[in-house]
Amino acid sequence: MKLGVAELLSKVNELRDESQQLVVLRNNDSAALRAIIQGAFHPNAKWLLPRGNPPYRPDDLPDLESVFHSEYRKLYLFIDGGIQNLNQVKRERLFIEMLERLAPADAELLLSIKDKIFPYDNISEETVKRAFPGLIP
Image (cartoon, rainbow, N blue to C red; front, side, top):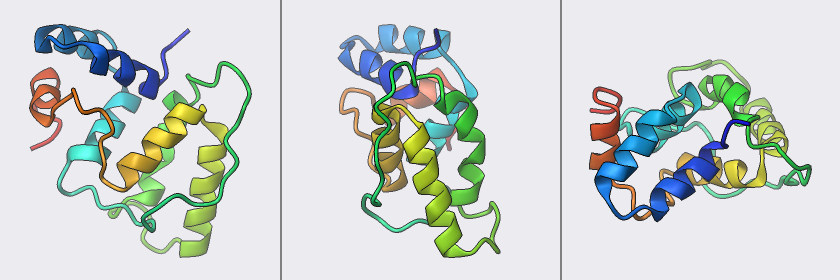
């Protein structure tokens, strides 16, 4: 089973050696991981959602860690440069629906990233840049 993005980043965050972090990040490279990294660190990633947590019910089903690997494709709906003429109420409702389909840890991660907060203190922007050259300026 594929690790959830939050689960993977938590494991990387526990590693104290940057070379080990780089190996784990590169070995678990995925489009979903790259989307989270860009959403967190790319200076042009502007979220079209209000700050803070919307009212949503986290899903309590087991084994939802792989869901974000398909849901990440919808992030363009919530970022400047995606669909501009989407009604804001609908945009926020779609975001809540996405959160409710994700594993709770992935939903919390996405909420943090939306507010431009990277919740893993031991993973630096420089480490991410070394792991994935050219992903963020």
